[in-house]
Image 1: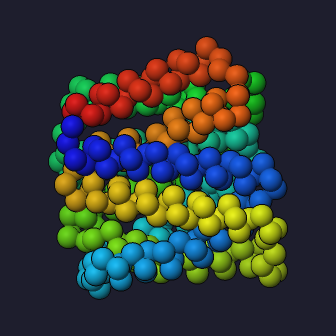
Image 2 (image 1 turned 60 degrees about the vertical axis):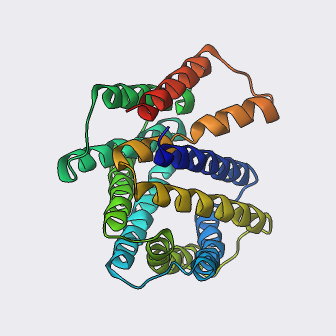
Amino acid sequence: MHESIQLALIAMVFYGLSDWIYKSAASQGVQSYHFMAIQSMLFTPGILLYGYATQSFYFEKSFFCGMANGLITFLALYNFLGSLKSGAVSIIAPIFRLSFIITTILAVFFLDERFTLLKFLALCASLCAVFLLLGGEKKTSISQKALIQVVIATTLMGVASFIYKVGALWGGTPATIITGQVSIFFPLALGFAFYKDRGFRPIPVAWKYGASASIFTLIALILLLSGLKIGEVSTLVPISQMGFIVTALMGYFLLKEPFTVRKYLGLACAFSALIFLSIT
């Protein structure tokens, strides 16, 4: 197995752990914008410390890729959160998870990355896994406004992942690209939280969840960017974005959540996608 695939698989696990933390925080009443602000607040010193410890931060053009990514990621999450106000999460979440398809299309057309039969099968299996594992069992509706917002969010997040690869191709280190990202994302996320609250008043438990998520996300992103320096974004991003496998398994083993036929089929599709991507 190629080293970049290994890095993406480990990143997937940490993204899954971060998603689990977010799910737990939401169940405790933590507002999404509070979580986003606190996570970035603690994420920022983490990447600065990493850059200092590894002596791998360089102010170069890839830093501006990170800045662009920070702005695009914030706009993506802003639209995603907005779509949740008037759309069912059982529809919104699966659509948002499909951002890796946008990344793959951009990589194939603009970076001339390979699009093999195995990669096509992997994307199809990933799509099925997303809707089987994240889609709701009940019939739900979604407003036109929510649909437009989630499509915008999904597209922007796909573009953001593509920009990571551009930064890596320009020779950017994880420390350089991520520092550029937080230089934009952090003030925007904190400013948005202040705007919503007319101040900043998260519930106390939000800090605990935000701290945990910032650690897991930072590790995942460093691993993903390290992989992108030597591997194809159209392979690595779909792998890393399948962290819902981890959350589904944690739900079963830790919370004893029931496993339906739908979930078994979803996991089968997800593991099939991972196998296909691992051997492309």
